[in-house]
Amino acid sequence: MTAGVNEAATDEWVAETTTFQRVRSVMRTTYDGQTTSEIAARAHVSETTARKHLEDLAESGYVDSSPSSEGATRYARSTESLILEEAHDILERVETGELVQQITDMEAELESYRDEFDAENPEQAAIAGTVIDQQTLTAWQTTRRNLSFARTALALSESKETVQATNAV
Amino acid sequence: MDSQDSAAESHSLRGPLDRTALREFRDVVAAIEPLATGSLEGEIRTTSLRIQLDDGIGRADHGRFDVRWSTTGDYNIHYTDDLDRNLRWDVHPHDFPAPTGDEHYHPPPNAASDPDSVEGSCITVREVELVARATVTLWRDAYDRGSVNGANELVDPP
Image (cartoon, rainbow over all chains, first blue to last red; front, side):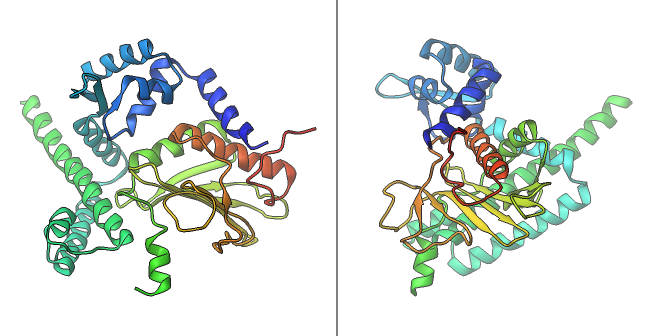
């Protein structure tokens, strides 16, 4: 009875979480703008509840809201919030020396893609009409993304040191 | 483009890999399955989530899930164990004649990719939280039955 596993997962999730936790969880990795109605369905909450939680999440900067032409507000995870979340996680788990090395390695990888496709990034390559296979495209985009998180982590680490040092005097 | 390239091309995840989704998947599994330990492959250059299972299904001693999840919600959830049995639940575009949707399943013993073997996936939920929970449930079911066969069809106990 294959419907069982999906229903069971949903029932457990609903039983073990608050409506706010579910809306936040859904929004954590929602990168395209979605309406309150779409989000409510995914989080198994009423639209009214979703709207309330989304307004709170927008207030705290976790999600960005943008009105659309039809009038329905759309919500997506705030990019700033996402970057800081990942940078923070990296800082907790990785030593500075390792972080610097990984950044260097990722920059080298991106340089090789730029050389291979004669473009600054995949968007430029597309404009130039260059065809890139899906696996390479995913690798390129993944490294660009993770490099951004890593650079932010390093900048955060350095700024923290400086600010703490200036606080101490 | 030879047939192997085009096969890889038409079966890839769309979009960059999503480190945030992999961390969430890991955390959900850790909270609900004591036998599972998840860790990112590549703390920064994250290529997948590796979930080690401390006991094996049937005669196996242990097992492992390798999870890849993209920002578009495409994913691979690949199971492998020390008896070299493999199976995989996937969501991504494909050119198999069946099933019609992006959700599909590569059955054991070797996660077969021939069009006759590939099935529709029993996992229809799409949220990271829910797919992680469904994966644990499917593993536990196979573990309790002692068999990887039929992993894609959860049968209620009598």
